[in-house]
Length: 140
Image 1: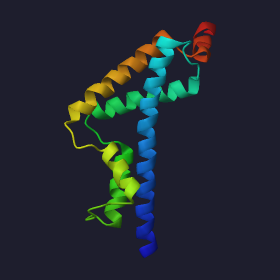
Image 2: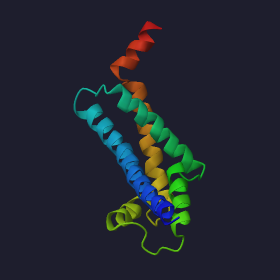
Image 3: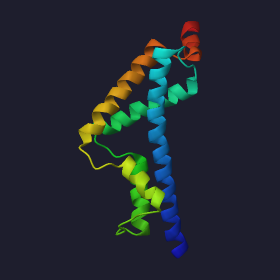
Image 4: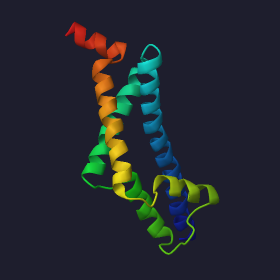
């Protein structure tokens, strides 16, 4: 049983790292879109751009509907199974990653920039789609 509870903790810590990676991916996609649109030929990493487009739209839908991310729900479920009264969950690094992902601020402070990033991403995708996507629409 002890091995199973430790496994819950380890998986929850891994989920925090993955979640942090997801947040970085969303921010990196925005920065690359901004940089590519204004300073050089817009990048044609079509798979990256499609994943970012759908990802940011999904993030905004969750935020607007006031729903928690499935990664958050899974992490909390696993932590509760490990030890629900932890005051300092996980390792040192995981503790600070948690603070970055789950800041204690008014939700509007996060919602407004998230919506802006999503609108910008959708508009840029429509104005300058990746070459591969543009080719699909030209053939059809």
